[in-house]
Length: 184
Image (cartoon, rainbow, N blue to C red):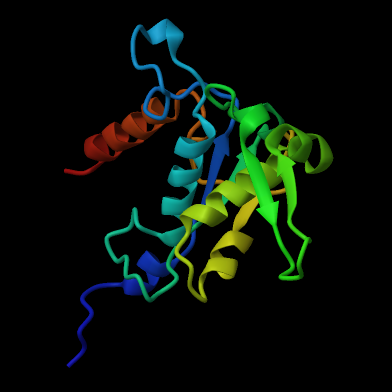
């Protein structure tokens, strides 16, 4: 007898999420009140939310040994928000195991050299589990410096409004009300 109930293939299907690194977000902001002081999500909060989506932990079928995560498109990475002096003090190290080969670079130099997308990719990479699924999950992260990206048709939409954009909750409510009115 099968151990699965219902249509599990639909649960394993991957959806596309779009997140803007520059748009103020009430849940991911470091400042909660007043509402006018809400900031864009800081680098760590943004990276942890992206890591959850890439792993698939937001799904009810999540299992640590399976790769059931979604695609994530992050826009406006050039405007990454960091708190304090991290932008000038945080250092990234690399070493090729030979004596005297330790290389250190600060976050602002890394952003100037490779852009904010590389800083975000390093932060998300550090939050993913260190196992054989890590590179596959990180490959589903698509980060862009500006607003333009080639995956606009793939992002989940409700009533023509992409999920995460302003007014998408109202579009979901309108669709649900229309469905309730249609059903007897």
